Structures are given as structure tokens and as C-alpha cells.
Image (cartoon, rainbow, N blue to C red; front, top):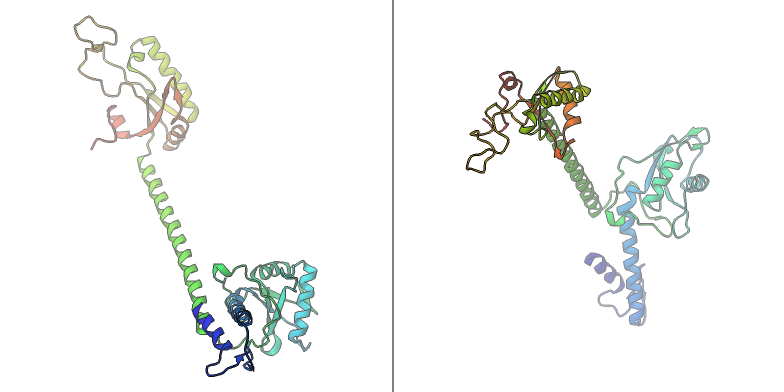
Length: 343
């Protein structure tokens, strides 16, 4: 970033001076080659980036340790050594550079609790799981995420702190405004993401409930089966009785079947080749209502629902059967030609 580069450049070059400023502020006499200047500039940038990344990831690299034993005069160095050994025994790995996974320990006033800082977020999560049940003396330590735990920006989730701990850090010092703003932005983005997911789930649930309600409102004790019989299959009395009997036996498997109605064409219908001059094999003015449909009357809506789920989509001869709910009042009025499109 420009601000980091400017800070590094200011640390290297002091206006009005012929020498070069070191990181500590002293001036190097004489001149430096371009390669030396570039190396120093790169080192300062790397150091500045390491410090910034440590601050941005620190809220996710710490564990709260409560119930520290009293009277043991614990120091940060003693606790660093204790927790590093505990991590080694528990199988928490070292950093990729081979350094111990524990970077630092910050003891709070009165030594009642502390924060253990690890070198990476992954090592922190591993230690959180594997150190449960750890004791120090006679005290069972309480190990958890701190209250201000927050995941770092996505590009820093794999960041690993290298080198020694930051001895200049003061845990009680107010973080810089830039760090607070970055952490707030991460929390806001995460909150927005969770809110969007929650809204999506609520909308999906509402749609599902509306569909279920609409389906429940259409439920009936009457089913109508489409694409199951053809008008000319119903002309012969013997074949008709056999067809109705077969349908009744099969559909009774799905619930208490009260009645089977298969409307037949009138006696004036002609389904054989006639001798008139037209090419129409049917002399009737049009199809009779309900002919070609099969109506099933079940004892309860639950029986009808079970039958519908079993019959809908089944293949009968070369046709795919449709099983639909039919209004009970229409069925009672023997109105077998009703369709849902009618107003």
C-alpha cells in the first residue's frame, strides 16, 4: 500500500541528510548502492507488513484461558513454556517454519486468566480442540475463544507469524483506528452474509408453506385419473364391467375405496367406421362430459392422498396416468366434465 511504502521510504531517507537512516533512526555515513537501498526498503516493507498482519489476525489467534491457579506467581515466560509443552503432548503441530506453535501469553491483572497467542488461526483452532481438559496444578483450566474473537480478512486466514513474539505490544493499548475499522468491516460483512442467508431460508420456508397450504386446500376424497381409458374401451358391457372391477381391485390397495365411477359414452355414439360420406368415425356432435376419465371416491382425504402419490405418473398401456384431486361438490352433482380452468 502507498502508506506503507511512504513510511518505509521515510525511514530510509532523511530529508537534508547525505546519509541513510536505519530502522532504529541512526544515520549511516557514506553512500549506499542501489542494491543495498532496495534490500533495506524491502526489509522495512516486510517488517511493516508482518506487524500489520499480526494485528489484523490477532483476534483469531488467541485463546482465553480461565481458572488459573492462585499463589503460583505465574509469569508470561512460565506460561509460554507450559502451554508449548502441553501443545506438544496434545499433538498440536509446530508452525511451517518449525517454530513452536505458541507465540506469546498475556496475563491479565490479578493473574486470574490469560490469553495464549498462537502463530496462526489453524494452530489456534487445533489447540482449542486438543487442550480441553488441561490442568495447571490442581486447577482445571477453562479454554475457549475470547469474547472479541473475529476471523481475519479472507486473504489472511492462512497467515503465519514468523520470528519472536512482539515484545513491544501492550495488550491493554487501544488498537489503531485502521485496525478497528478493518475488524468492523469484516464483522459487518459477515453479519450481512448471515442475514442474507437467513432471509433466503425464511423466504424458502414461506414458499414451501404456501405450496403446502395450496395443496391442502385442493385435497379431496375424490381423485380423477386421466389418460387411463379410451371411449371405445367402454362400449362392450362385459369389457366395461371387467375394467371397472380391475380398477377397483388395484386402487383399493391404497386406501378405503368407496366407489369407482367410469362414465360411458351414450348409445348414440359411433366408434366404428360409418357409411356416411364424411371421414369422421363419430356421428355425435362432441365428446360427452367425463368420458375417458376414471373417478375414485375414497373414505378420507388421507386415503385419497396416499392413492394419488402412488398412481400419479404410473404407466397404463402406453399412457402416463395423471391423478388429480376433484371437487367433492362437482362429483356429488355428477358433473364429471369439470376442469380446474373453469371459473
